[in-house]
Length: 372
Image (tube, rainbow, N blue to C red; front, side, top):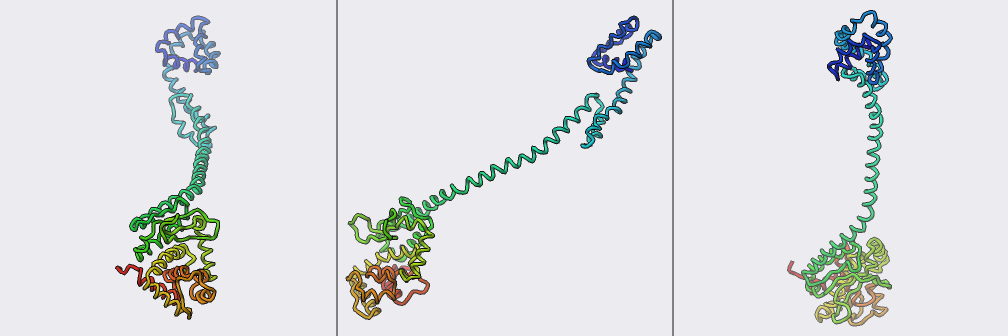
């Protein structure tokens, strides 16, 4: 059987090994066909049987050639039956049934062992891949949390300034919230106040030149109004960037001031502060109008039960004591603060008191645009 296998092996690469095979039995050179030992170790095993049979039947070398073709096929079939042994090692994965049909060569059983190893290694790689993809996702989420907050504040403030400037452009007023940055929420509330007041009192609003934030002041001044031209500051309203830069703190402080009657209802909010400062511009217009000023003095005199003169600043103690319960502690300091506080309550309070209503109605009578 060993000779038959080697005969077929030589037939495939070299089609003329048959004549050489007939000369082998003549001498001791019969062992020369062992050269294929480098290819298949199976040729060494049957050599003993071949040597014992060679001298008795010298014509047998021809028969192996005929049997070679017939028996070689049997060997392949037998090999196909015996070859499933290697797949038995890989039975846990059950590819033996698929590997058995592979008839081409005896070397193929080694191949199923190769896919087995990668199959085990592929699974952990697939598990590790999502872990690596999750880590950058978390990192990107963290990296986009804090910077956008600062960037968003800048963008929101710039947008608020642009909207405020659009309101100001209609009346020749310059708006600046970013040179000394305000809180975007504060800027938006100022814009709401400007939009209402510029629509209701356009003549007074266009008399201003600026609405601007100022560097944080050392004192407790939240905001102030410049009423007369020709000074170091342009006519307008100025907001403290320190106080207006912290919207929540300013709102909480305003609530306490309203509860303590330091300011009127609605006067502690951002809109209330802006209304108060705009009220100074309205008060100046009233004081400069003899008719409007006379009407105002009459209303105040009737309310406090004594003559009232808007030209007397500050209020004397008796006048202040009489005005404070009607308005607020801050509104009792002088005529300007009284009118500004009354105007704020008149516009923002849910239920303005009678004194604020009377002062507010005088302002509307002489200064409000009646084209609506």
